Image (cartoon, rainbow, N blue to C red; front, side, top):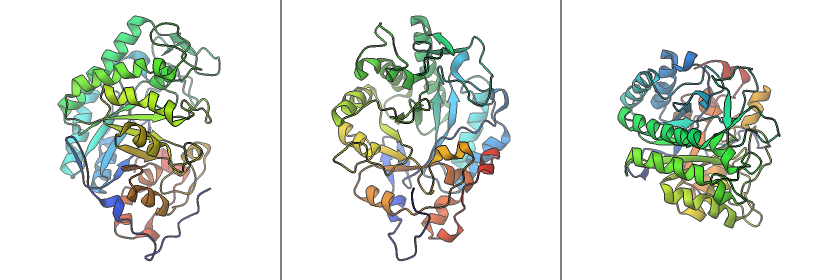
Length: 376
């Protein structure tokens, strides 16, 4: 467990967090990214005015780049809760308002584009029309919550990602993130426990099982054009198995991520439960550090930054105290990764970046379970 906050004016400077960063057309004033966090405040998939205000406040709080909660493509099976926001149809009018409000406040924003695949909602029995869909009809526990996707299904999903990218560029988003982590659809194609296909979308190697993700990246890259950055969020762990690992060596990691970089990924968003844990034996580099090393691409680190407890504890009702930044700053200074994503600390306190920048550490708020139930 990380130690609770003990930083003083004499400890390491937070200056590294407030250096500018550039990638293609994206020009960030600092290295702080708001991590995507599912909020479930969009009835029937349409974000409310409170959602608009929620993102505007984070821009007012000087977040370098806001990544929205997961927003789903134009595919009936793409979500497992009716309050997950859509990224098509009339919801796009609200996302236009979000972009306009964030830009007016001086912020930058990217949508996270999502398809849940065969992952059911553990809190609800709700299912989308036609049920869930996944590579092979399983989610890793040999339970068949949905149907295996046909070639036509796969083609339509890839096209749906492309349409989402077109919409994001038209609306004026500053970058786009693909959710390819945590045991959702794209990750279900990566993982041998959920991808048991024997056609071109499956195979015994991770590189073969990555073909679907490569095609999604290519479709979105073509829709975005050459200059708008495309971010890909990946993880080793799955919600079905916290100890799962796709790549057990740096070479396997290279074989997994390099084709995705070549397909058009500009930045890898590397999700860990605890960012400070080394990814492979023999090195203290974390997941984002190794992803940068094997691809040469910028990376975002994420995983319990700024708080004492890991984020999965939030779903068990656990709170967390503010934690120091010495380690993440040291890693940022040595260029292990390029950007730092902050989740629950920003959910709790939209002024978190300002307080950290100004050294107002005693004013940082702890995270409590009740914060999940409101849009503050």
